[in-house]
Length: 360
Image (cartoon, rainbow, N blue to C red; front, side, top):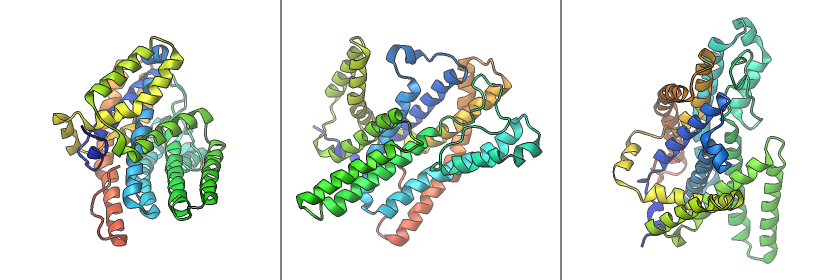
C-alpha cells in the first residue's frame, strides 16, 4: 500500500501536464466570458471551469511550494525561487503587451498612446503586481464584446504571492518561536501572530474576501497534504469512491456538492498527479508551458476578438490555443527555464551542495 510520501520525493509525476490542462481550461472558460456567453458548467455546477482550474493551480502550488520550503529550510532561497518563477516571464509578457500588442491594436495615435500616463501605469502595476493590478491600456479593445480588459487572468498572481508570504510567515513562526521556545506563551504568540497575518491580508484593500478565503483554503489544503504525506494513502479504490461521492453530491443540492468539492479536490488532484503513469509522463520531457499559457491567453483572445468580434467560441478557442502555445513555449525556453537556471547558479554560490533544478 502506497502513501503520498512514497511519491513526493520524485519529480516523475503528472503535475506539469495537470497545470497545462488547467491553464487551457482557463482559456476555454474565458472564450465564453469574452464573448459574453454562458459557460456550460456554470449553470449546472455553480462554478465555472475557469474557477475549478484556478483551484487546481492553488492546491498544486500549496503542495509543491511547501515541499520546496521544507527542502530548502532557508527563506532567502525560498523567496528567490518564487520571484524567479513568477516575474521574468510576467515582465516579458507585460512588455510585449504594452509595446507590441498595445501599439498595434490601440485606436489612438501612437504619440497619444505612448505619451499617456495610463500606459506606464499599466506597465508598472502589472509587472510588479504588489502595487495592485491595472487592466486597461489607452484605446485598446474598447469595442470588443468584453471591452477594454487587456489581461483579466493576472488577478490570481497577487493572491499567489500573498500565499507565498503567509506560508513563509507561518513557517518562520513555527521554526523560530514554536520549536525554539516550548513554553505555552510562545505557542500562544505563534497562534496570535498567525491570526494577525491572516487578518491583515484579508483586509488588504486589493483583495476580495470571498476569493481570498477560497484560494487560502485551496493553497493550504495542498500544504497540509504535503505535511501529512506520510499518513495519506493513495489508492485507486478510494479515489474512485471519492469521485463517485462527488458526482452523487451534485444531485442532492448545491451546498452539499460545494462541500464535497472542497474536501475531495486536493486528494483527487494528488491521486492524478502520482498514480496514472506510462505515456502520460512523456510530457515532462518538453517543459512546463502552463504559466505561459495562463498569462498570454487572455490578451491573445482579446486581440483575436478585436479583429473578429463575432467569432464563435470553438474558433476562438482553437486559434487562441495555437497562438498562445507559440508564446508559452517560447517563454519557457527563452525566459522561464533560463531564469530558474540562474536561480540554481545563485543558490550554488550560497549552498554548494544544492544541485537540483527547481521547476516548481
